[in-house]
Image (tube, rainbow, N blue to C red; front, side):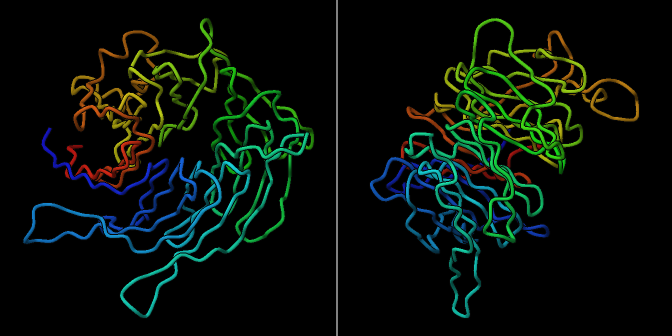
Length: 350
């Protein structure tokens, strides 16, 4: 697979990295959040391509100090994004155009200390997800919070959603969320219900593994993939099965992020604490099974030998330290790492 790799040293560990979406052009602005600094940062960058220079470098556009480690960043739209902190707070940020050549970041709302242990100690907000203007957060305190980008109030809190730490959350529908906990359980919550109990619980059978990230299939949201701390990639069908459909032994270390390409649903990208970033694609012979019109199942729903239907490509040499986060737009992938570098992988074949 032909692509170019551009790495830049940025003098801090990057825990989250996200493209600023652009519907009509290749993304070039992106946001990063740091970890393990005395003073962490949210930074806005610009990848400016120089026709006369084959290499591409990110230019720092704006730097804003941040309290705690940055645990998640999610864009609501091209101008607003939400970020969470290990201090238990959640922040809504706005990208503000300027009359000069540069743009800046502005803090719109801070939901301070919305994750806290019962003894009053700070609890990390481990993950958040967005659906239009709605925001859901989870934390080590086992709490779920429902927010909205139009208000500084917390609309609903499920205090004891789980007896152990919640690690991941995503919206399945506007009124339905999926969470995962430290014990390896997935739970579906219907936000229309007044009670504070999940509708369904799914669990890994056998050796306990903690989901470290999760995502749903772009066209079939009942198909959910989770990555865990053992490096396995697990497929779930939320319609029928309490236990996973298949478990792939994948990375050497914990999987830190999973992303489907929203335009090509047979394309998946993963990264890990082992310093690997992989591109998963369906083999040519299996592509017809992805088409919804022929009635054949999605390749990820194959209970057995799913690996035989997939090809896996490494997008860059394995690093000696974790790759914590990745994001993609069209055929451009960016990732942030513990080696204090940012990488742009340009021209990925799809």
